[in-house]
Image (cartoon, rainbow, N blue to C red; front, side, top):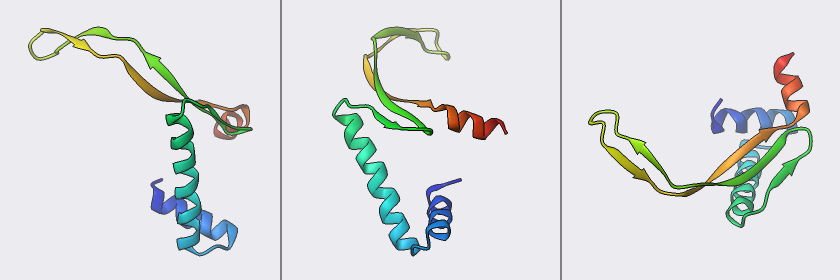
Length: 91
């Protein structure tokens, strides 16, 4: 499912126009991204938790040449699904 399909489903289930549903979804995604940028977690009970994690600098290997390369440290987004989401996927 892509964003357009998600907007269509949300519009159908909420009786909003597609334009309004897209605005709501975009605003929610922007709010999540902004919170993560600020270092905060976003907990949606039953769905899951979005967070950030620091990944340390490490050494990797170029698969073509076998040369060792330094991979810089990075801050990456993470997602941990909640119990209700896990149960919904299993059924």
